[in-house]
Amino acid sequence: MGVAIRAAGEDDRELVVRLLDESFQDDPVSAWVFPGADHRRSTHPRLMAAFTDLVLAEGRVDVTEDGAACALWLSVPADDHAGGTDDDGPARLRAAVDPDNERVELIGRLTAGIHPAGRAHEYLWMIGVTPGRQGEGLGTALIESVLGRCDRENLPAYLEASSDRSRRLYERLGFARTGPALDLPEGPRMWPMWREPRPPAR
Image (cartoon, rainbow, N blue to C red; front, side, top):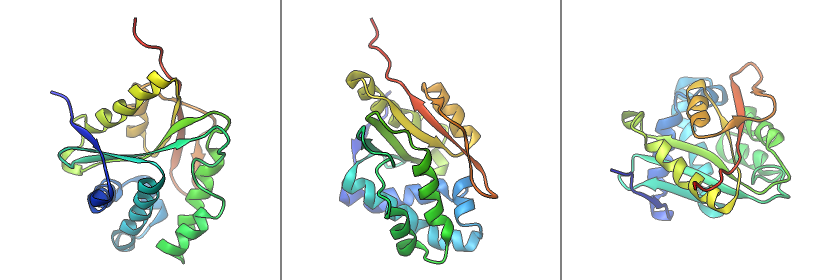
C-alpha cells in the first residue's frame, strides 16, 4: 500500500514546524548550530519556523496524509547561485532567530557557497519524519514522488546530507556526492549530493 502525499498549505504550518523540530533536534548540524541542549530546545523551533515560512512562500512543502513526515523543496533556476537564498538572507535569518548566534548565519552562507550553479534543479531543503515513524519508508516515498517528476521533466535534484545515515539513503535513491564535503568549523561534515534525471523505463 502506497503512502498518501499532499501539498501543504498555510494551515499546515504548525504541523510542519513541529515535524522538523522533532526530526532535527538531535541532528549533527542542528547540534552544531545550537550546541547547548537547553538553548537548542527553546530556539531550534524558531529556525524551523523560518525555514517553513520561506518554503511555503517560495517553494513546495509536501506532507504525508497522516502528518508523520514532510519534505521542503525549492525549484532553483539555472542562474541562481545560492539555492534560493539571497545574499542578505542568512543575516536576516540570524537576526530573526538567534541574534547572538553567528552559526545561524554561517550555516546559510556555507551551504550557499557549495550550492551548484548553472543548471535548473529541484533542491531538497529539508525532510523530516517524526521520530516514532522513522524507518518506515515515509521519507523515501516523499522524495521519490518528486524524483519521479524530475525524471519526467528531465530535471536534476540536489541536497546536502547531514549524517552518514541520510547520505546512504540518498545514495540508494540515485544521488551521488558532488564536489568536496563541507566540514563545518569545529563541527560535523555535510555532503553535497546531486542526482541526474533518469530516462523513462522502456
